[in-house]
Length: 103
Length: 460
Image 1 (spheres, each protein chain N blue to C red):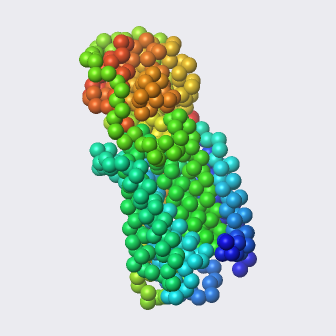
Image 2 (spheres, each protein chain N blue to C red; image 1 turned 135 degrees about the vertical axis):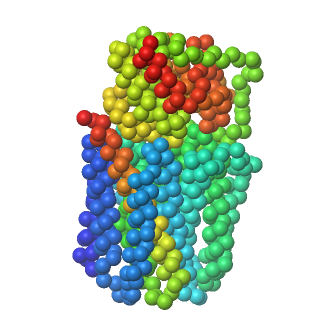
């Protein structure tokens, strides 16, 4: 119990941010026409590549001779970057089609 | 560094506004660009903000970004519109893999002898769990969608296996927390358990439920990114990840609603082909349509409704379908498309495909509108759709899809079903529509059949 109490009091600001972000995410998305479900999912998927930030921090902190960590970090950045670049590019392609058709 | 936090805040704002704009047709393209620039900004800030202990290792970072960036870009440019769902699923899995790798590295960085019962370590274990489940689950979903993994791989008693796996994962996690220091081999066992859990989680979910699964895994990846953000106390990661987690969850719930099922039912139940085929084994007669008759019937109809499904995507027939629509309109026929929310393998899959073929917006009717108009429709063309027009969803309480809202095509004058064979649809459920009195079948590849049909119409 003590441990949980301590954890909450130490991280109260984080808990606030998390709660508000959840609310915000639900509000922002609540009304979406079916036409946009696929592009939206794809765009959101690209945003989830934000985990790349973590991989960058990880490498910047790593010891320059700790090759295991550097290689794992390199892999992490590559994978997340595929997610980010591929995700946004695919979404853009999908949305292009909607535009063309509206004319 | 308060200025850094402020710059991150700008990036967070751009993410939120971008996501908001992505959900409206007029602003979607700008929204996507905004979200992309938010990501670019966040990356640049992270690359250059001053840290206490840095070696920077920029060479490794740049190499990683170039490798991943070019692979992602080429994949995105080359992928066919029809293969979009599995592409998204694959991208999604890679994001999850990154969270998993971060968790692995951070766990190995924990100094020997440090206390395990710590918020930071619990966070690392959660990042590992969510990231790796999302990774291996997405890979399975990817395989299922591109056809390399068929639903024939059936796990015995999937519910029990999944429950056991979940318990094993949780037990292992708790055991690690109870050690005196970081136990690397136990951690690697946990990693393997998580990866296997992702596989057993997705494998039994088959058929018509794939859209829901992709959407669910998408929100998992978001949550994994947010948890990884907690490890570093990085607000962009936390807010960005949670935004995706929340939006993915909403989208998943929307999908489930469209199928009139609960998320619990999808994840635990699954269609799993266990075959509660309460349908009788009466000898049933299938009527085949001939091209010539069909062409004339279509030409002299007042109103034709096209119901596209995954078969249209597989056959790449969206352009041919649009040509048919144009030929018929030239004959004065009113042509509309009836779009079921879960037709295809992703929410909105059919809309994207038809948009690619330049089918105008107002021609696409959503479920309720389409059902209202079907009674006054002369001919319905079902192209590669199956479960979304299966009347047993309304009539047969024993059917696995009972209760799912469907397109009630049997109200129309004639129903023509274009299909490759009599095999049941992706969900593996028998469809009484095909034996209906006013139903005729046109067997063959959808694109091929449509081509022939257009020729007949133009020559007749």
